[in-house]
Length: 243
Image (cartoon, rainbow, N blue to C red; front, side, top):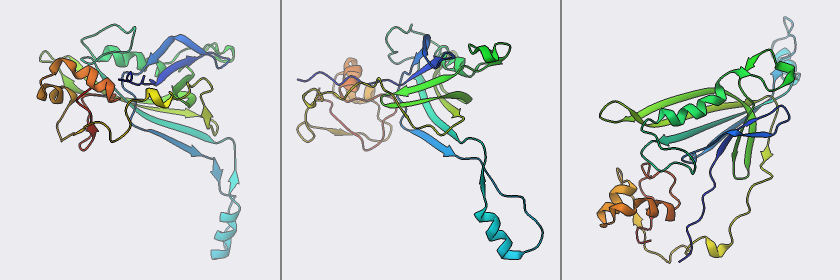
């Protein structure tokens, strides 16, 4: 049986003044995001208008829109964290999910700049979001944390974090160090050659594994099906429970 495919994890890295990653503050996400939203915008201003002219005046002003300064690129991404689920390798276990999200909050926290040009100012660190071939360098301008699952003694165990990043230019970058795709023979069985079960609303990998008498194998089943978050299953998803 082929080995389960190794899932590339998204990362957040701090950048020095030369744009090089600082590995000491690197954060490997626990669950990859479901989607990324990238928005591009130019700075456009209308020309100085003068009174009169009616529709003809409006048409001339529309045609005379001016581009000023540089464009901007914005990235929106949502990440999930769960203190009860397996953590990335090398990350210590915790019973409070905010110990995990605190590491992400580092990237929005103003601190002494590593750029000599801003040595006397506290600014958020330059940050790189990297996932496979996708790469975005910028500043984290917003972070929203939602705590949505608590223990009986009030400790937050699960959270979602929405990050907004911005770059003061039009950026369409690729990660030059991305790993090539695995050979076809290592990607698992071909579609249609293994039995699948369809996920229903409210199902989780844990409940499905328990339903077939294998409650202790839920992590192996999730890994074999390339499921990032075993608690968030989309109804209608087809998975192989017989791995």
